[in-house]
Length: 498
Image 1 (tube, rainbow, N blue to C red):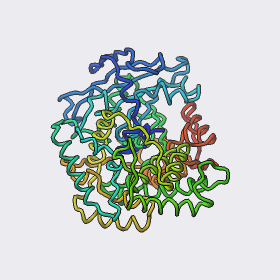
Image 2: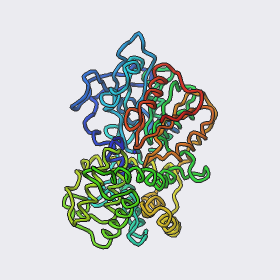
Image 3: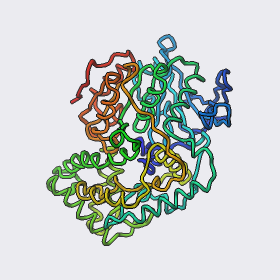
Image 4: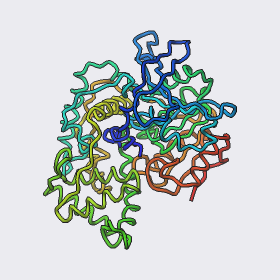
């Protein structure tokens, strides 16, 4: 959602975790009036490549009213490193919702192979509502910024009462701000903003590398503006169809954690039972699972103090949330294992530092507006009670969370009609997907692949973690994507990278 720690979610928390560096890259005042060149200037912040420059693109608050009020979308650029080999612009579409790629030309963009950096200007952006692009904020209480609240974990007995109360409380807080932009933050709005950015850059077409939620933005952009797309890479892919294609897209994303956690837990359990592992939890994978479930139940009954956490207790929910966070990247497996080992002894390691509160507030507001606006969410407690009860039986690791009520159950603004992803348009999409991904499981990626039909080819990577290309994937997958970006060469059919 290394990305939602750089990603709502790690969805709303994930969104928050995904945008930890957001505040470092505020561009100086620069603007592009309609039909005039962009005014590029130095980017504010530290740790940036000195070649990176920043500007602002004006876009309508409401794309249905192009002559109405405007906001500025902050963008960044590192130009092609070999102008004679330049093909165009490669937009780095961030995850989230609530993530930014404004600093990514200086960071993840520099991991791209030389031939890709030669071929493209690398473009980052802060999507609407994300600082510094007209930032929004619902001014939530500190307690309501806890990751265990942002993820809709039910009570230990499966109760959703507190979740519904949280939804009403936070939705009311967002409504009280009176910020009109909250009603105009959606995936379709982001896609239309991207086309304004493309035009401001002077590009006839644009290429893109979208990650996590960015895959949905990329797919929607390619649906709305197919003639404006060049080479599109979608990495760690979200299910675009929802429940039988109905307007429940973001509910399907949450539900995906059921299978995503199961897929990754098997890998964690193997790792956590290996002889010689200093963080070994148990002697075999089945025992690791039993230890985790038993400990979570015990902490539900008798939480431990956890200074520095929000709230300052380690209960079953906090353990499950740590599991979820740790599964985005196998490098984080030791974090969960150490917590399990310590908690079984009645102690806990220090709580991990939280992102800055201003960042959390901003990411949560953007994530809420997007997720609640993109999909229809039931308002009935009974609907969630039934879903949670069924999920707890079938998927005990996630304890009913993926079928529970987010604050969207009380969101006061109307839901937008999602853009349907189809197989109509140019065949210029390459999907890359890890086989074991907690946030965007393979099952959901296959639905996007099916929706795109002959427009796409998918590379499935035998690897674990979120973010496949140049991160948690493997050399075979990386080579395939790099070749496509650099040369346009794409496999003739779906492939599996062992």
